[in-house]
Image (cartoon, rainbow, N blue to C red; front, top):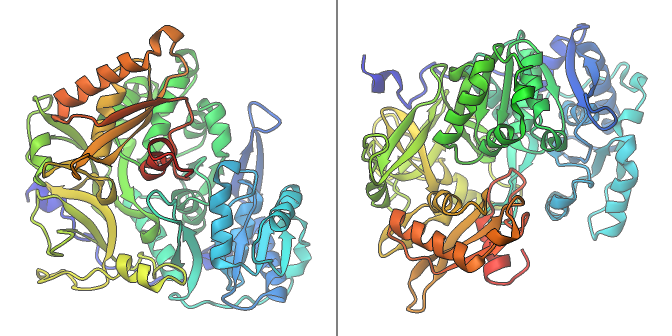
Length: 586
């Protein structure tokens, strides 16, 4: 059997087995005194304080929360989760699902940099109840009072609900095709919208992740990705409930303040499974000192998903060089691909570890994937995102809507029971995104109800490679240029430019055509003598011209923190362009 046959992009393990609502798996363990979720609290202790809840305790609190919700809501009403990233969030989310309401996983108002996103989501779905914690209750009430929002019937602190409230409570059994929660997208290119995730979709995608990575009740799901983000919600909350694995989590802030904490999580518990965007691996590389690395034993790491943003071959190599000597298995690095509209997981790298392939840059610009020798002039290294698990992935010509042959670049389309039902109360946008129809589909390919991801990619040797995003694509003289490709060249053009804080985007030329411009942050470490913008711009333009045969139409150097990001950490190119190039507030 050839490598391509073994790595077929078709579902290889048959159909999804029969499923049931997620919280029923929790109550299977309602008598267990084993630890279920552990919150590592670094707010008062630099080394962290463990707050642990057992499966039995969690089931009791979830039942009590659901009973309280049932007194003030009806089946199918929306319930927003505005809790901090701690155990109250876990109880609130599962309690909302158990009550048969539609959960809306958001975040406490203190996450100020995403305040606009929070208000927009609450305006969009008008939840009848807001769930939070006692510690965040005042700020949540201030949010309601200080913004023109639909007022909830009640704001509840879940950690103040008496456990006895759930005595004798009989929860409704929601249908698998009923909405379980609304996953609000990060809004990298458009106004955030709530993807309607059904009970079938969440439990299917959780099973897909367990099957793909081999997660079971002997594993530990670790990390810091926020629960309001699709990857954090599934990897750190839903997947442990489904599989019985223990979840050990911290806050994103604790990771940013001291990334060594994440590495200690990975090494401090048995059979660890984590997930993070590429920048987190880079950040750990730069911030974790060699003396601290010496204390780590990462030999128990089973898998670490690298996803949510472009995955770089250089990052994988550097991370392995730094942490491999401390036990991190090379095959544990699992580049993957997913999006909120598919619940989260679409493709994943198998247990053989990362696959990196060099493609001809000029051929990619013409929508063809031509393999070259590593390091060859004009080549570009891409990291494979793997294969799907019991769902279909096709590369489709975005205009003609026909399936493209292997090696040809097109839009990534997804079909499977894990795909969302659409966007909350947005039928036209839902049909545009979830109503993809393939013209003359080949055998084994359904014609309708495809999720159009907006991402570009190709299949090579049976593996999916992500090449860019349609809306970010820069087309100059008929050639495609991927912004992330330009951004890497820019950040390497001068030492004063801050790594991974560069935004490239299309701009209109005087003759009505399309060109490219760049906004880049300068490094905090750069001395005053290095911050000659004219000199930096000259180096950048020279590097871009040499590597891409592109004449930049403009370059702007901005202070750290000025290049905008989405809530999931992706570069918000359109918003950065609006603010720094067009002079508009994003």
